[in-house]
Amino acid sequence: MGSEIVGVPDLGGAEEVEVIEVSVAVGDIVEVDQTLVVLESDKAMMEIPAPKAGKILKLFVKEEDKIEKEGDPLVEMEVSEADGSVQDQSETAIESGVNDEPETNDEPGASDGSGLEGAAVSDQAKVESQSSDTKAATIPETPTAPDVNLTIQKPADNASAQSPQSDDANVPGEVYAGPAVRQLARELGVALTDIRGSGPRGRLLKEDVQAYVKSLVKGRASSGGSVSSAGGRGIPPVPDTDFSEFGEIETIKMSKIARLTATNMHRSWLNAPHVTQFDDADITELEAFRKSLKAEGELRGTKLTPVPIILKACAVALANNPVLNRSLHSDGQHYIQKHYMHIGMAVDTPRGLIVPVVRDVDKKGLWQLAEEIAALAAKARDGKLTAKEMQGGCFTVSSLGAIGGKGFTPIINTPQVAILGVSKAQIQPAWNGSEFLPRNMLPLALSYDHQAVNGGDAGRFMTELVSLLGDIRRLSL
Image (cartoon, rainbow, N blue to C red; front, side, top):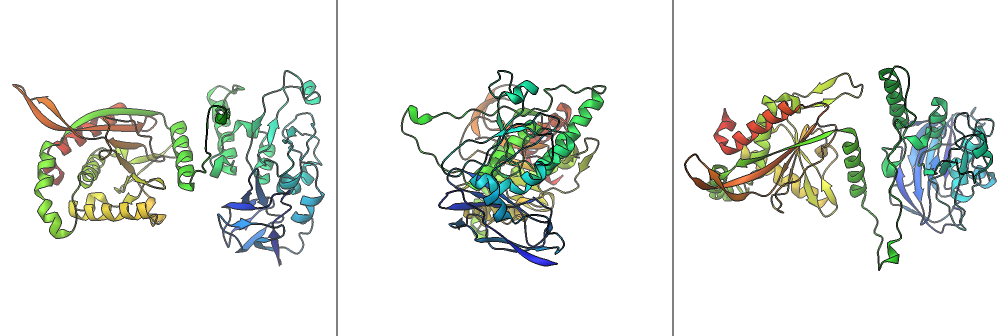
């Protein structure tokens, strides 16, 4: 056994690159071509693959580090001395001028690449050059570092493979995946352009390929052995627009939290069939009770807002309607029933939406919940939450009461199966059987995953929640 330093390859003319993702940790066992680090320049993104299989001994960089020269160390690996068949990454980056992207049973097509792309996939190109089954890959030519998100063009037939200008050729689509993922896709006989990535910046992971193949198998079984050629195809991306043609613009980089939130929300929306149920809770008596505790709250140094009461009511309603306190198993044949009440609360921060989790809500009193909620919200706004404080939620409450609005449809925070949206309370006339009286009404919106929750389950939960908020004495029953 020996150690090997994986360094920065040829930067393709880029003056500076940024480390945007460290895909491994010290102690990880990695395979050949598994992504170690992802770098990004002004015009390109590249993955640095493992030149050999081994164990990660040391990391020399972290996310957001700036790298200015070729050869700077990135990772130190422990590798087998006998494994000398893989060419050094930096040498391959310089020598490789071809970037083939083989797929399954298609005619060969030319591929041209240099700079960052040559370094990112050079090792894979050596293995792929031995295969006769290839697919055309076209890379935009640029005097500096080209975009590493290869544009894959899958020919419609042999003629289109030989003639790139053929009208029958499919529209190219971009793929962001590492060499190991591409090899797995070839082994399984699937096209990467048909798969949507769930990794950072939409990168394709091995799990995405495996899940896609699993869905094809299930589809074939349910359809008697045939699968539509259009089945599973990803949603076409929105084409870029040059907004500068219409006026002055500014391109601002999204924060990491904003990118993760966008990815998670998109995944949740695509995977969970959403249904939203609306209702209004009469919180006239609740508000009177809460305001009566103002003096006690000042003595305790804690302000009792409506949020602790809402979370407590949700915990009671979840206990009596456990269907909403479960998650679907990935095999599609089971569900996980949770016997704890950890509830997340969405917090609007300068860095984006963050959801800390309040644990064991059903076992705590209102004052204790008020203190924990205030502390977690403050940590969220200061960017000091730990990963553990944002994990383990079984239900989420998203409140816009302080901002306003009459209602909204919240997106489920999968793998949870339900989320409660709370809007701003308003005084409205309510009929008591003989006359209209002014009542403080709180708009509620319950979004639920119709795969796990039926309308009757959601209706019973919402009815009980409205009842609990209308008479908080029921929380003690």
